[in-house]
Image 1: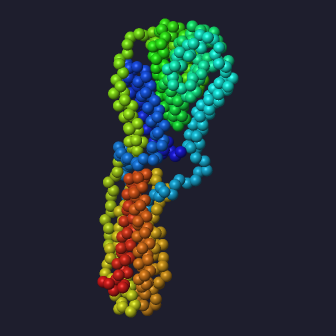
Image 2: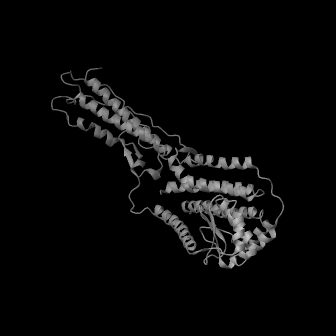
Length: 453
């Protein structure tokens, strides 16, 4: 990953996370399910961002201050130089930025993979629940789910948790199985997670953290999604269980350590008071505004594309073009025409391009291109007694004209690259114009020699 792409992803992901968190905060008086929907949409937008940034056309916004003025470059065609960004940076052996990014993403993915493998082992070693009260509560709650669900007991589980899609699995510990009076509350909470596909949303959040591990706002967004997911499950569970019984169940499992790759009922002691207070709060929430929530969720992905395409660039500078000075050029007549001397010809002067000093490490010069095009013409040196010398054949001059115009066309194509800065593209346009002027001059000389004029 290049430094430019990493910088673009950093500020774009930070802006996206801020917008999602502020939208969730604006819905704090609404049911937790609405906040979960907004936060999930933000996670999906984060996952799409790395795919859209390099794929979409660049939308440049010139809001940065222009670079400090610098002396104009030489305006003659023999000394015009602009950087060549297509040549790429010099080989440095190791791309430390890509290495650091890969290491951070790998650690996050490694932790997720370890959690999934641990859960797989727990499920393999688990046994079906045998207590009749748990079986009855589970059978009653599982009727609301259209997917296969199983209830297992594992010796490795401390607090209840759920995972999977089809089949979905609820794991409880043997100690919790000995509390039949907690069965309805525990199963209602875990069934709520399964009904809402919270496990898939949790996996999407972990993948977003792997992509944006360097952004603290991404960690804050996923943590808020986890917290609001538990609150949404609580709100759904208390519609099937008495609030006091549910609060006592939360107290019983408080401090339990859930798996990193599963949705659990455990709550840390620091957050227990706030969560129990919300459970016992019987005050009705504001009714869900489905239209406003749907518009917010639908509009967020639509705003990701313009955000991904936006590129902040510096404001263009006013280029200073030096005045052209006439340069006399002698043109030898073709044999057997009488010896004549062409009048003064003005040598075209290319406009100067302002180029930041940090980008002048690999210049592209017009002089070598012109010299390469004129190479066949240099072999015709002046002959003694022939005045100005014998002119090269007209065909060679026309071939040189074609080479110069081909080079000019190549630099015009480079100037259309949207990934380059405005100064670089202007410099390429200046090079193309200078080469085209040189080709026109050489073509006029060929026509004069051929006797057209």
